[in-house]
Structure formats: structure tokens, C-alpha cells
Image (tube, rainbow, N blue to C red):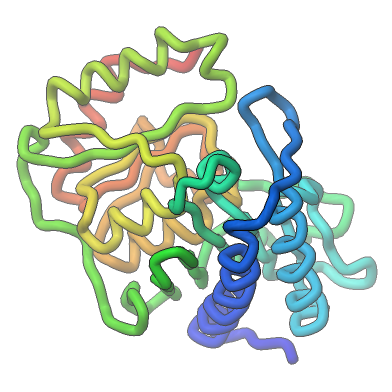
Length: 285
């Protein structure tokens, strides 16, 4: 099987995300094996790894001509004999810290992105040139599946959703997260929180970027910003926002592809107001 149409790939992403989510949900109350990765605050569990193995097995079997970029594996896995035009970008368990501490707020994120021409096995993944065109985010604890594809509408459990219509930043609920280098640059990141705490109605820090983006897409949150996410954090979520009528840029207002050094997602109406605040406080540390 080698599906190529955006809707078919979005449906495949949703199906696999549900399957991986069921595995995660089954393990939610079981003992966890927890390790750290690049930083003391960057966790991985045996469940992350089991969910990733399941997703990779399904995609390698069903889409052998596609490349794969997954959080736990890290490197681009591309077919040795071809120049793949499509890459799957995967976070098998976004919100690992929540999961590890028994907080029921995490998700599976799977997206299909188009790669630049002539990408091969040895090429680095160019996040600014990769274009998401199909994806799904599944919240296994709420049984909520968000799906989107290029040219279509974002859906939640099969029903179309769209971003909020809020026009005033002062009446908006906005969300954020903190990068893994937050201990070294706490004052810098907290300056953004403080500024939006004053400018917006309130700020949420819930701990799963894929769900923050999905919640922007369905109007629960009006906007979201964060520094230094990874492509697997945003590839599906960015598409959800865009197909729901919202806007995604970096902090300068440019299209970031799935480069998540700077991520700003909003309902579109609030975007310039969000950018104005972010520009006051950038550049990065």
C-alpha cells in the first residue's frame, strides 16, 4: 500500500494514532520505566518507545517508499534506493512528563510532509522546506482524534471544527510551554509569560504542544506560542490550525515550515496582536 492523496494519508495517520493511543492508554496505570535524554527535564518512558515501535512498524509496512522522522529515533530514516517525496513526522507520546507523573494530558502526533526535491537518505531534514499536508493528533484519555489534510477542513472525531472568533487579545485565553533549556534562560522565557499574563485574559501551560495546537484549531484556546519545539511537536498541529482557519508563523510573521525554533499559532484575527508582543521581547537568548 502506498497512499498518495492527502485525505488517504490523513486517514492513515488517524488510524495509526488511534492504535498507538490505545497502547498508551492501556499502560497509563502500569508501572513506568522513566529515563532522561538530553536534559534532566527531558524524559522518555518505555511507553514512548513501545508506541514508536508500533507506529514505525505500521508505516514501514504500509508506506515503504516514504521517509520517517520520529522523536525517539531522531535521525531521518529514508529508503536506501529512492528519493522520497514524503516524510512521516512522528511524536509517539507528546506530553511525556505529564504521562510519567500520571497527569492525563498527552497525545500521539503523526504528520505527512512533502520534502524538497532530491532529498535522499544522506540529506538532513530541512524543516523550513518541509510542508505538512496530512496529519492527526489523538488524545487517548479523552478519545479525541483531530485530523486535517491540505484542501480540507480540520475535524474532531469526524466533525468539522474551526478556530475561535475572538478579536481582542485582552479577552483571549492563550497557551505556551517552556523549552528544555529553561533552567539556563528562565528569566528570558518568563518575561514572555509575564507580558501575556498582563495583555491576555489568562495564560495556560498544559504540557503538550500538539494538544495546545489542536485546541487552538478547535477554538478552546485563542493562541499559542513557544520557543524551540521540534518538527515532531508541530508538524500535525500546525496543519490542524491552518485547516481550521487559523494562522501559524514564526515570531517575525514568516512561514516556518515545520521548523519550530519559534512557533506562533492563532485564530488569525489575533495574530498581529500576538506578534506585536513577541517582537517586543525577542531575540532569543
